[in-house]
Image 1 (cartoon, one colour):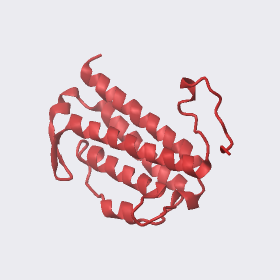
Image 2 (spheres, one colour):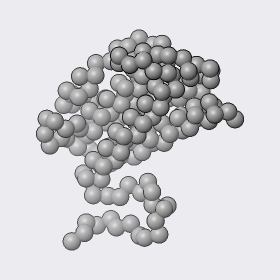
Image 3 (tube, one colour):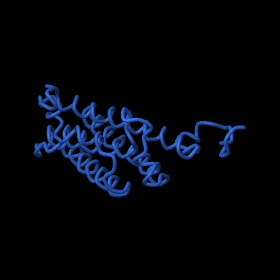
Image 4 (cartoon, helix red, strand yellow):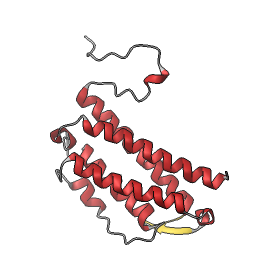
Length: 171
């Protein structure tokens, strides 16, 4: 295995893992909670799903894979509803799966190729790295929101603790 193939393989696996965690969260939230926000300056989980889909499509499917750039970033944050969580999740899943296919078939010499995206000039490697770290950041926001709504430990790291997980709220 080369550094290049390890990077692409890790990036694919990390996006798949993070998507799986988002799916677990979405399964626990009714549609009202998917679109809930306490102020106009906050993003709902629904906004984050739209935003992640737009970001991955623009940075990977457009800048790396050459598809048309159809993103309306402002609309991702302006949406106050826009379909059920399962529909949003299906769109995000399809985009992530397309991106993973791009990663698995990308010739390693393309990693140093320059691309233009959102006014930035960067390497394909940097574009992929950006997408994975950006996806992780918003995934953790979705996890946090889900914990706030459900008051549940989602168990993603329970294998690291020997303490029993509390399911009831503390007094």
